[in-house]
Length: 360
Ligand SMILES: NC(=O)c1ccc[n+]([C@@H]2O[C@H](COP(=O)([O-])OP(=O)(O)OC[C@H]3O[C@@H](n4cnc5c(N)ncnc54)[C@H](O)[C@@H]3O)[C@@H](O)[C@H]2O)c1
Image (cartoon, rainbow, N blue to C red; front, side, top):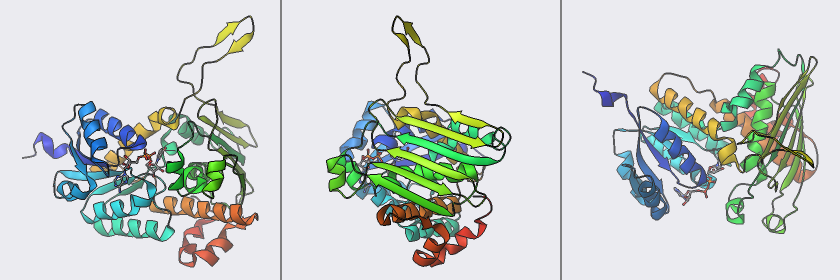
């Protein structure tokens, strides 16, 4: 006879930094989910979190991870450590028969991403790459109105300016602005247009000395042209002093959809000097709070077998491929023909672009 506990999904979180804490807090909000383990290279960080929230979860150092994987009630692992450690943790969890949700980018290496998805398939376990913006209520509402509100799509634009600026320690191991940050916007352009770009052109500049010092840039413009003639544009920056600036515009033959910045408070001040508004969200952690919750609900539903993955392995691969093409343009200063680039640099992945004129 099934007991009540048969229905409970046991979860471990690997990496209790900025995003790991957000995911833990969301897991604690979900019914029939048991946060069993918090695992980090810094044991004290895991212990402090458990203590702070008075959790029953066990805090472990990564060297003790086998203790978690040996636990049959552990069914799912959320990988939130620095990107250079994703692949190892994803593969380890999949090999031990766990479902995996992994932060973006899944890996810097396309081959590693492919290996991870193949392992997931072989083990019959879901692997979910956390492109959280797809789960943002405002963003998904806008997409649901394409094409009825805009007609034939002509332009998709994002403005994405971060706040607060990441530490140089984070940026040094982040994989660079395109794979670490712009990947969200690249994914948005592909997801909104439902196409893979034919051409990508990117320019950038390092305004911050320390960012130039690590060989990266902090301001980027990316332009894309899609097979049906629609165009995409990304205006991305590592720091906006006034808050986490996130805007989206979709323009077409019938009209336009605009996603403005979201404010935690919605009042307006009028006085003798005019009108003003309270600040926009301070960081992605609050701006995209709803999306982080919704993506977790989705992942847990997939683990329960109640939903199928809405971000597929192909989606993850194609978005990451386009980021590599963007990096190529950034470093050469030339537009990149995506199909030629893939055939030359990643011939084994060219089949992914078979739907070049179709859906993404
Ligand atoms: N989807 C989003 O909006 C979003 C936002 C922030 C970060 N991220 C992604 O999440 C990941 C983590 O970013 P963050 O900002 O939380 O970083 P962070 O530096 O705040 O936290 C990383 C945590 O991982 C721990 N850690 C280091 N090495 C480890 C290892 N080998 N095994 C386990 N834990 C280890 C660190 O001690 C730290 O607690 C990155 O891949 C980043 O791209 C995604």
